[in-house]
Amino acid sequence: MLGFVNLFKPPGPSSTQLGARVRRIYSSRVEGRLAVGHVGTLDPQAAGVLPLALGKATRLIPLIEDRRKAYVCTLVLGRMTTTADGSGETVATSSVPDDAVTRLNAALPSFIGRIEQIPPMFSAVHHGGMRLYDLARMGKTVERRKRTVTIYAITLLGREPAALRLRVACSEGTYIRTLCEDLGRSIGVAAHMGALLREASGPFLLSESVLLEDVIENPEGALIAPEHVIPFPTIVLDQRAASDFRLGRIVPLDGGSGDKHVFVRDSARVLVGVGETLGTLLAPRKVFV
Image: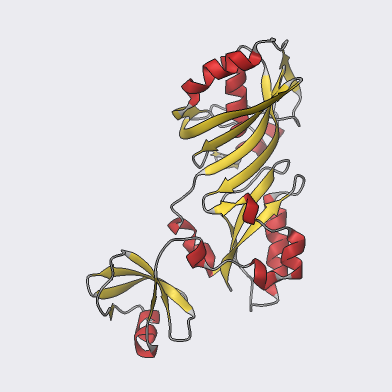
């Protein structure tokens, strides 16, 4: 088993719970325990793209260079919470000014580019061997290091009575909840994140995602080949060269290759690994035995 699933996550279940469901669906097709890796998780109340790597594809996650994210969220004005989203207890309230949109449009340029964020207490960041959310549930607050993230674009999509709809394009590691709080502070209003929908996670797009029901009905159809996720070219080796490659040996490469990394398939078109080209030689970098 080797491939990716671009799963649509609804609000409610955790990313871990959905990963376990997908593992059970595909486990009947492999011997032993099937590895499932997340290419970026979502909070339980969030929805959208939840990419999963299955089997040996978990070893390919570090090779996915495009880690940009795209979200649509609601910025709820007038209330700040302990969790920075709607599930937390209220810690501050404020009136919502009539010119909130004008203020926000004036503030948005200062949030574009590289900015610093303090991870929220309700996050999976480690501190002293524990997750921050575990400490938060114990009523503890600890000092957190600032993180540098990149905001590529923020677009105001519309306004509701006490909320603004935003589309955010950002780097991996960006906390949208923190962004919403900080946007509220910049216009002098208590704020938190309402609904959150992830539209894209690197090469995985919302328009191409599948429901869990679709995976149950057609597991093979939901599986995405690595070449469709990671833009490496594919080289096909004959039986002898593929056997040497599987054993970790450098093999000759007819004519060389203009690309540093390539997917390697044998004569039966079975994916045997990822190779690095060294002129007219091909060195194994990840081998799938």
